[in-house]
Structure formats: C-alpha cells, structure tokens
Image 1 (spheres, helix red, strand yellow):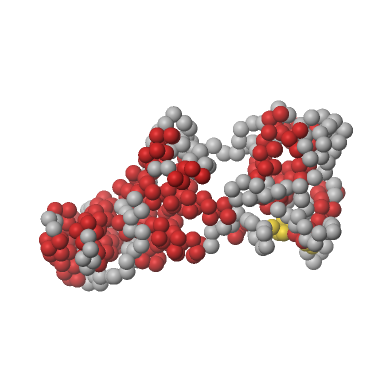
Image 2 (image 1 turned 30 degrees about the horizontal axis):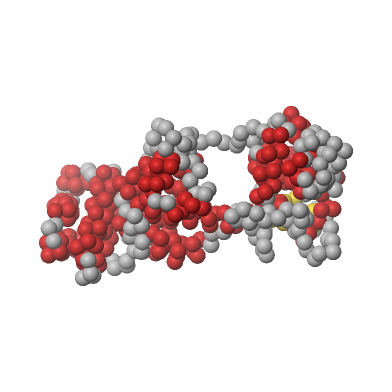
Length: 422
C-alpha cells in the first residue's frame, strides 16, 4: 500500500474536521451543543478513514517512519473527543490535536461549511443551472435527504448518516413525491403511509444517491472540508436490502406491436369527433392528422422525447448546407429540454418527408406558433405532452395494446436500437 498517501489522507481529513470544531468553539452561543455536533462529525470521518487505512500505523512502524509515533498519538487524542466532559476539556483536546497536526506540517483551514439546504438554495442550484424536470427532481432528492438526516452542516456528515438515509429510502413508497402534500408531511408520517405499498426500486434509490453525492462533491470544491476520496467513501459500496425491487428497463416496440399500433383507429380511422381525444379508439371513417396521429410517428423516426416534440414551433425546422431538413431541439423561448446535452439538431428521415412531416412547419396566420396547437400545457410543470401521455396510455388500454414498461418513451428506445433509421 502507499503509506504516505494514506497518511496524508488521514491527516488532511482530521485537520478539516478539527478546524471546523475549533471554529464552532469560538461561538459562545450554545457552544457545547455545537462542539458536540462537530465532535460527532470528526469521529464519523476518522472512523471511516481508519476502516480504509487502519494498517497505516503498523506500516509506518514496520518501515521505521518517524511519523508513526505522532500519528498514534493523534488517533489517541481523537478518541478523547467523545469523552470530553465540557468546553474546557474539549478545547484542551482540540489544542493537543492541533499541535500534533502542526508537528506533521498540516495547516489548519478556516472555511465554514453551510447546511445542506442553504448550500442547495444559495450555491448549488445556480452553479449547476438546473432546468425544469431535472431542477425539480434534483432539488426534491436533496431536500428529502436534508429532511431525513436533519439538515446538518455539510462537514458534519459521515458514512453512518448516509447508510441510515439509504435504509430510510428503502422503506418509502414508490410514489413518494408525486403528491404535493408529501412535502408537508413528516418523515414518520410518510413511512407510516408507505407500509404495505410498493417501495422505491433500485433505480430510484440509485438516482437519490447519485444526486446527493454530486452535491457533496460540488461542496468540497467550495469549502474544502473533505477530499473526493472521503466523499466516495461515504457514498460508495452501500448494499441495498434484499426486498428492494430490482431495476426494470423499458421495453422496445417490436415490429408486430408497431403494426398493431399503426393499424388502430387513430391511423386507420375513428368515428370520434376531432376534439374527442379520449374516444379515438372507436373505429370509423375519420383520420385526423394532428398531434395524436403525428407524435408516435415522429418519436419512432426521430428518437425525440415527448415534450421535445409536443412543444415544437414552426421555426424549429432548419436546413443544412446541402438542403437536408432537420428539427431543432433547444431551450430558447418557451421551449424546454431535459438538460444541456439534449440541445441538438435531428435530421428529418426521408420517410417523414414522404408522408408530409415538413408541412407541419409551414407558417400559418400566427407568427411562429406551435405546430400542435391542440396540445395545452397541463400538470404541475405545465407540459404540453402531459395530457397526451395520459390519453396515449388510456388509448392503448382500450385498444388492447397496453403492456407495462412499453410506453411512448419506448418508441425513443426503439429508434435508438435501429441505427438505420437515423
């Protein structure tokens, strides 16, 4: 093992935790309560490091390194933190630790770390420029983390806190957060309501862990309270309980299923009125080439997401230097994308040109209007595809085409599995 590197990681982590404790001691208001919290953080960080680098002292002694005795004393002094009986004794212990760190050439820092919610609202949201769905979900993940763990200072968290949080996530109902009232309920109430219901799955819990970990990684760049290895040590390698549902992937549409879909009444003929979207499953003589006809076709031949296609304007059609048409997916004006990587130009396949897709973008009387004016923004996020998504699910049920995990977004998955269409 690289003893020097492990020693440096141990010393640096202790230095940061001790510095935080020292700063808290300077606050005379509720000083004992504050230092107790910092001591807990110090212990959590050090225990985690010793679990990973516990053989460093033996290594140093074996190699005859002069730091071995100092580091042994350092660890002994750290162990006294939990036994400190008051401010005076706590201060004395911290002074000894500081002296030992000074012997090893460690410079104490003095950058206070904020609490989770303060960092989220004042720094993280702006720095990451989160948008729409991503903004809502990421903020909800982090706010839930703070509610479960007590919204502590960022440097006060250890692996034990993260494991306890993950175990709580495992017990939450899968539908947590879909009702606005969930934000107002206590954690205990949410856990009671989750009993006997399907719980969060592996994929969902993984997203919570990923986004909260990303916030901590960003925070250490600002406040230097840990190294990236410390953050990895807090979050990585936590095994989920056996009852947690495993990840379930969306299914692609197969040829026979696509044929059945496009032979159904929306494309072959319906007897419903144009505005009676919920009755389009009834066979008849009318074919309305509106959003309900076009959206699945466009998704299958462009790989676009539902909202990307539902919000298109007349001006979102362009042509390259060779005259090849493309659809512009962007977040300008009232358009929205999942993230910055979603901004792109999608070439229009010759098949779409053949069936008249370019006509959708011909300008009408209203300057630069949306190509599907029948779609209205609905739902909490006022999405143009929100109501359509519900109608598409109901339509497939009524037509006998519904199957779990095979939905509108699966058309995008099908497109990506067939590169010949791009």
